[in-house]
Amino acid sequence: MTLLHTSVAVLINLLWGSMFIAAVIGLREFPPILFTGIRFGLLAILLVGFLRVPRSLTIPLLKIGLVMGAGMYLALYMSVALAENTASIAVFSKLEVPFALLLSVIVLGEQIGPRRIAGVSIAIIGAAIITFDPSAFSDLPALIWMAVSCAFSAFGFIQIRQLGKIHPFTIVGWISVVSAPILLTTSLIFEDNHLQVIRDATWVGWSALVYTGIMSSVVANSALYYLLQRYPINLVTPFSLLSPIFAVIGGLLFLDDALNLGLIIGGSLVLFGVTWINRRNNTIVTAKDQI
Image (cartoon, rainbow, N blue to C red; front, side):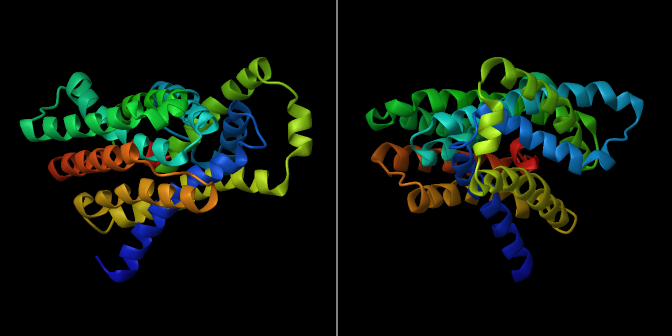
């Protein structure tokens, strides 16, 4: 991989990692369901030109929209909204890789050998250490929501794999069109003062919302598939382990997050387990990173 393309791979994961920081900033001004609904509404408008698909793909894409938009991303932003320490949920988010591997066995009947089982086990042990560290108990609701998000993400990833070859913007567009009205309606039911929130939101809050949608889902996604057209998957996907590292650094620099021993040990085990899984299964590109 050339130095330029290596820099692009690092930039992609910097954008994904910084998404957590931007989300925290945006959720200071927007309630989480409204934030997610507006985000997908914006993406639906931007990607309307990619919505045309064969009729046979309509139902599968509707299901993916429900799982990924109304499920995974709603749980993700609920987690971010509740978290006191962004670093812990950023590392925790990589559980989607072992979750996806396990679901590929259950749903697709794929084989999993002892080495991959070891990787899954190591990652789960690391997650348990983060979860049950005494200093992280205040973040337990956020970690639970992130685990739910990872489960939705893994299931959505399996559904996306079953689609075959399809433009990633088509997937993002359908997820956005399906989930935006559901999320906005849900926000009207369970959240209050929408007009006041929108009126009082500053340019910082709006910039954070736009950043999470465009920079993460459009720019980073385009760059990822640019690299995948030129290099083997096993050269590109390991860079995804940089995104939680960038999120941890950003949390320490901009959000006054704190590192603790449980996060350091547990996070290291999660990332090591995911690395081991990717080493033995280089076809995994997580659903969350695709959108």
